[in-house]
Structure formats: structure tokens, C-alpha cells
Length: 99
Image 1 (cartoon, rainbow, N blue to C red):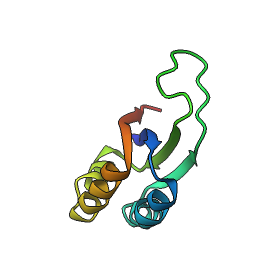
Image 2 (image 1 turned 180 degrees about the horizontal axis):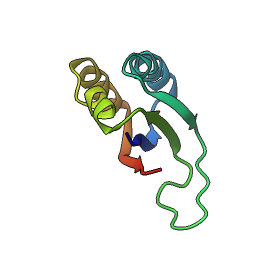
Image 3 (image 1 turned 120 degrees about the vertical axis):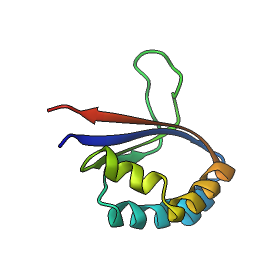
Image 4 (image 1 turned 90 degrees about the horizontal axis):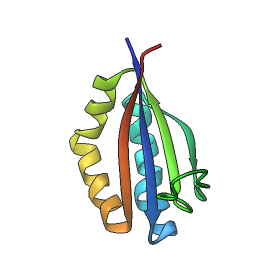
């Protein structure tokens, strides 16, 4: 079974609302679905490219891609995703670890 990761770069428009209305409830849901945060924080420093410089970033690890997608496509996350989309612009990617 291959671990899977969600990598997110996000430009937050209202940090306080984002944390309270999205971040806190999403963290509980991530845990319920078997995910764990590896890194979360503002102030991405780009070494090359510059696309996400200054944005916030989140990296979470999941047991596998199926668990990750069960979270992502759940009804519970759909509601939170709508909140996120109203408060921030995000780029979300999946990366699998073949090791």
C-alpha cells in the first residue's frame, strides 16, 4: 500500500475566518478519515519559480490514495471546501509515495 499526500498552496484572504470556519473543523475531519498533518503554515519561501511565494502551505499524509479521496469527496468535506473557496484561492495536488 502506497502512502499518499495532499499538498496545498493557498492564498488566504481572511486568515481569522479561514482558521475558525475552515481550518479547525477540517483538521478534525482529516483525523477522522485517517490523515495527519505534516506541515501547515504561512509564508512559503520559493527557491525557484515564484508561483506560490508568500502563500500558506499544508501537507498531509494519508494511508493511501483511496483514504485521501474518501475524505476529499465526502459530503462533510464538500461543505468545508465551499467555505475554503469563499475565503481563499488554493492549488491542491496529490502525490503518492512508491516506497
